[in-house]
Amino acid sequence: MTPAERRSIIESVSVTPILIEDGPLLNMQGVHQPYTPRSIIEVVTVDGTTGLGETYGDSAVLAVIEQFATHLPGRSVLTPNDLWALAAEVLRPDTVPAKLVENAPGHNIFGDNSMLKLHSTVVSAFEVAFLDASGHLLGVPVHALLGGKVRDRIDFAAYLFYRWDAHPQPDAPVDEWGAALDPEGIVAQAARMIELHGFRSLKLKGGVFPPDEEIAAVTALHEAFPELPLRFDPNGAWSVETSIRVARELEGMIEYLEDPCLGRAEMAEVHAATGMPLATNMCVTDFGEFPEAVALDSIQVLLTDHHYWGGLRATQQLAAVCNTFGRSLSMHSNSHLGISLAAMVQAAACAEGDFHACDTHRPWQTEDVITRPHRIVDGAIEVSDAPGLGVELDRAELARLHERWKRSDVRDRDDVAAMQVKDPTFVKPAVPHW
Ligand code: GKR
Ligand code: MG
Image (cartoon, rainbow, N blue to C red; front, side, top):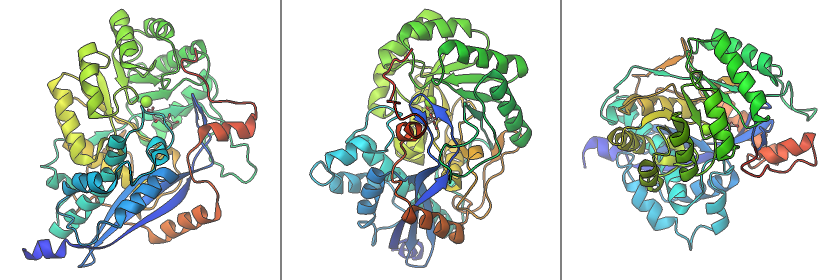
């Protein structure tokens, strides 16, 4: 063993569940809760080097990553590839209750859950922490461990949401964004996002209101910002017929539609009928789903997400597959903090291919667990060349957000339950909804 290998041996691993403030953002299945769970991972080696990771905090994922973490001491952070074999060895149908597999990553907005996706989610969480620790041990950025960055800045899109002014709960956190429930509100939100962060690309989350109301909002965005690429994502809320109608009405205004309907065959039908480029984070959510999507021509843009595709190296592999089959890339996100954002930036920096601006929910988050939260300038984040992920844990904030988790009974993201606070008769909409 070399000296570096000796120092790379893991002494301890901690998984800290936290609750972070979240705004009342609407989507097709309800609204974000006032607080949403995340898990923060710290892997510490025998010489005190720490590697950080961040992933879902929903109870099913938390239970599995806590179980997995107990197997890591004694292993080396320099060998993240071994995590797959370890996952196969210790996370099996007889060791992981089926309900944990079904519920991970918790809120079911992308594809079906499976043992493969659970392994990918767990491996990713620890792979990021391993790479961060390795970068600190060797004094190099994570992108150097991934073969070097192919771009210096990562473009992000302003991720626009219909939203209420405030959550209905009296003690919920408040933010300054105000309501956005019509085209004027959405255009004003876009203008503020651009003013704050210089975004050069826009994405509207749809599936909230009947399609014609949302077409009006997209049209208003296009008229207000004609030079900015625009995309629109109703999370599979529409039928094939509605998707075809919306695609035709928005032709020339949007760069692509994201998951207008559910299903690879259905998406292919929409593309064949309209020529509209389609993107997904719902109908292709693991490598096994890719061949059919290519054969049917269901999608033209794949939204990667290292959190459930298996990590940063898996993102590079996915990019290679996309390049081979002529698909371009963007990146999916959920409410997240700066460790996830740092990992997203390093992943995008090392993924070859045609990248559209990535999604990030970060502008909606008011808190962070890193000492120097990222700044989005001119719609982009500079790829850090500092060792590891280039972020430092804010231990006081981590402790505060963990205390909040301990005092609360929120254990899962549940947009349906959050909507029921305002409307007790609300039920999760059947899909297709329109
Ligand atoms: O945050 O409400 C949301 C989004 O709808 C999120 O859950 C989706 O996973 O952003 C995602 C998407 O692109 O579908
Ligand atoms: Mg999407």
